[in-house]
Length: 347
Image 1 (tube, rainbow, N blue to C red):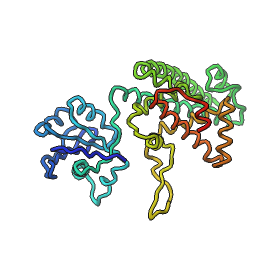
Image 2 (image 1 turned 90 degrees about the horizontal axis):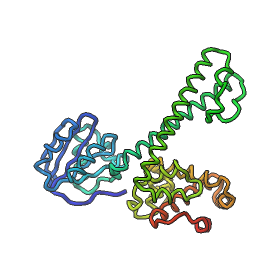
Image 3 (image 1 turned 90 degrees about the vertical axis):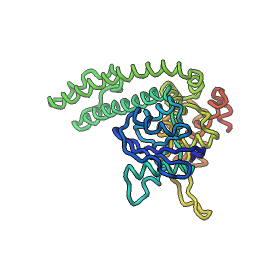
Image 4 (image 1 turned 180 degrees about the horizontal axis):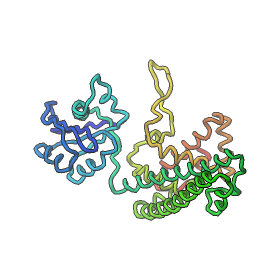
């Protein structure tokens, strides 16, 4: 957990919403200078903080509306801190909770050096990262269509279509195999949507791949040197990490990627683990997929998995392999080197 500890003359806490924002500005002694509910507009915000811009820091909680405020502060050279939503339990822990109280608490945490920070992803690559996340959402919707087609065949005791329905060539005659007209119509809708999703996803992948070469082609090539990391996993890791130097240690990176379990201890005794939802779910997915694909057609990788299974059991072996790939990725991006198979196997 990282806290913002820099000192300023003024501290601004913003409880941000889609159409409104509650602003609280404190001075260095904790005196409330501004405490108002305003419209979420750039010119309104700049007008309110204008008398204090000589040395002010602005903080907001990491909710879906923070983009425009962070970009505005970057353009206006105003210090901005993004509060980690899950860590900021102090905001939600009081007996009474409303926008006025939340804004003041954000400002007080900021002034006291107790505001847990989240990463403020720069705007240059942020929209492409969000587009890549949108692609994953579409892929999952496409998978639901494929699942519905298969399950409908089971419902009517029909054999599955020959070949994978994911391939367009194997979809001919699927709807016609059902006698009921409504079921045929349902299958036709599924097939039409599948064809549309195929085109949209293909166009998205081409577009994102072209942007990635402009943003950081060198890092993308390094990631592709890892066995099992192809086009999509490489893009996911590239855009979710953004800058590897924001992680001072490999342990910080592994924790952010949800590759390790966080221990809970009290009085010298371990009482379990926690924090499973803290970190980047997309990196967790990417490294978990990379671990599975790493084993495909890789005898040395399969031997490594067997070795891990003997030590830790089948349940933990694949997670450990994903952790090893994550650690290797950290050092590759940090040192700008390609994947070293021999070193990876012996580590």
